[in-house]
Length: 265
Length: 273
Image (cartoon, helix red, strand yellow):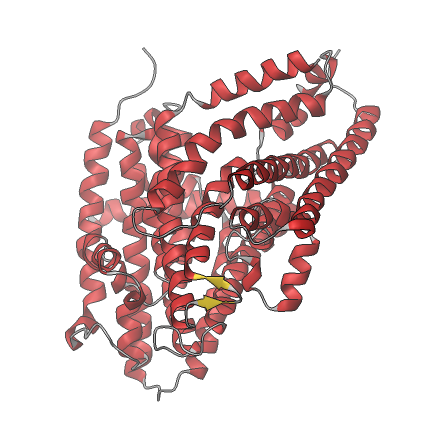
């Protein structure tokens, strides 16, 4: 089973490498947005005496580029393959496979994400270094912790979309729901603005939602804002959201499979 | 284009768009879900902007009303372009990649008009609401005396901005005739422009200002009109005659867009062997 999922992930990685120019153009747009956001955030920190809400200009610039790098890794804008297959009835074939649908899709998602780390995650940050002083995780072991947080963020991103995609079993058109999830992610994950700059009540709300685990928390870990038990709690939060959303997805899948009727005969 | 032809194109456009609206209206729940998603999306951006500028007493020496006015002048024209012209974004994936552009070219009508009509989506009008509300709020709270002349200049700025963004959309669409996979990258011209335009030009470093002022004349959409209309701090020392420049800049950019579109169509090769 593990071997099978490994192969699924590997092929998904390979499939993602096919579209070179499209990938480059995506990395380009992430970099452009990174530059604009970093400039604005650094400006705000500079006129506030070098720091705003406890974040330095250097940390905010790093936030701008890292959050752009995370978009495709965690799939912030979603994936539309599964609902299309549910609508067309092709999902029946997927359910016949001798592998669990959720794990299969997760392997698929992780394979693609691994490619996106190289293609869309690293380039904006490296290109950002040309004009901005960015902050790197300090002790070497911090990279390992960040790696764990990034994987957890990717799993949360998957689990969330898996749930919203499965709604296609009940609704004909899930694009509206998917758009709403994308909206929530871009605002509450810290993509439009780091949620640490929100007014305190809104920041508290954003931190209580699963979206923060996708971008805000891993980037904060990258910046080294947490140490000791604080760090353990933040990663624990990400893992809890990942598990909770995966379980929700399983429950939805079980109930959807029971009501699945495929047309034709 | 002769007047008759133009009239025929307009009739065709109205006809197809009318049909599109009627078909959207058949699925009302879906329509209103999408419409609210569009409103919320733009509203979230505005909320983030307000949160950000509230962190400092003055943003680039401008007060809150001046920044919101700038935001409105940058975003309302963009949303208008989004409603009517952004459909050209579909060119790459829906028409060029599949080769369906062939059938568009075969029909005795302008290719651009056909795409703009066929891909029209009424739900995009949701994007007009937040910037329109912001414009109203800023107009009341700006520390200036309004006159008919000033109101006229706002209309002119909105018109110029809409034309500039529309030209950028057509240019972005034309690029995909050469590089169909570069579609996402062309978002830098459209969405990137709109985002960069929401903040005063003088907070950007010189090289970004050079891109936004000269390479892509984005500064003329919102920054230039805001400096003169809101009578606010002008640290870049823009000369007063710049105030009437936006429509002229728009016409130049439209000429560029037309040339690129025509060259692009000539360059188009269908798919297949």
